[in-house]
Length: 554
Image: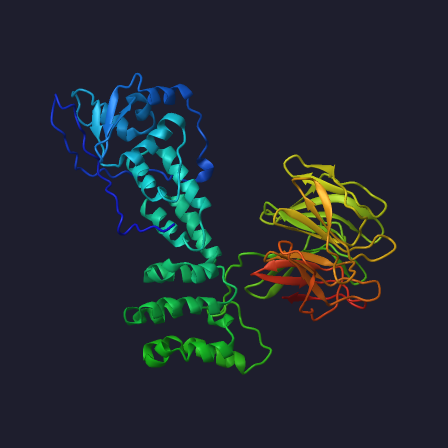
């Protein structure tokens, strides 16, 4: 789906009105009507309207019709003026002749719109919905906007929001901005910020951005890039697409790059040696502060950059890593630490209303963090607490089953009802196992059954509500961490009954087959956490048999 608002600009003028041939000639209204309306495209403002089925029945049978619309292709469509006026202030004004007081009401009008699109708008007028596709949305939305049919505008914007992809989001964003769909424009810009790295690789329209559009994206504090090398690569790609006409923008665009987050080696070899920089003294002068910054930092090994320096100010992270509780210094803790990938810094906070615990489960759902079960050094918990990071508040939730043995049972939680219910049990009893979801299925691996460390693995199909065994792992693993990443499952670390492991293995469910070894971690560890950030697997904490570990990324 591609949009070209530059070459497909539709008129905002009122269309011609056709009176019956026996009365008066066609009148053309050329005056431009400038409408300032509140944006109505926000999908959550849209609700399906159930129209009486009799309306469409009368339309299909051509019964009780009292008006006619003649389209650009000269096809005539019989309509009910009251029904069409109810969904469109435009048609109401035309039919009742509100622009010419005292004149008879219009019964036949001409619209400079193909009958295909007019029929889609009529579908909505009579049924409350119409079919929006990739092939028709680019014209349907402007026509609906022209006739002020709010419901069709909302349907189109809903469709476009669902269709946002790296290859088309720039076009949709420009399209929304041109037609004053403010909320779709805002969500499109958010999508661009969040998926910028993929857009740079996959979107052909990136090279056609204007300088102002590109600069606006690259200066954004919320631009989601793993590192600033990506920002420089974006500048380089855009400039080299038309270097003669765009090289004058290089100094301004390079000022968007936060050089404090680029390695000195990359800065010297890739940026200072970029030919447009070598050839232009103005560009070299623009880079002088960055040269000084890197020279000073390189001369003082071990020194951290000042994050208040504009060159080193990190962008606002798209995701934050939360480490909650855990075992430290011989006892469970109630500490909450957050990790900012952009600044590469941990920040500690103490939550007085949080009971110290370790060996609990953590998961996120609807931007809330759920902490399930755990152990405080003497008691095992069946309690559940929910944390809202925005409000910085904890709330109690319904407790799960309070088991006293290793279990094969499985519980499912409904946040809306705040209720747990038992579902199909696993084939094996397990504690210290690890679970992950992938492609709508739940996988669980390893663990301890009270007698032996397990290498077995199972999968739960929510449709059939059945657990099935999959191929066992290469190593038995208790205190293992399982994570889904790029269509594969990764089982990392754990305890095999004799020692902690730094090994990992990968399984691709779509291909079946065996588990395959992956690169070893630096440190052996069990009972740790894993999470995905910036398209990388982060490994946090754990126990190596002697001491607790820190953070690694893979």
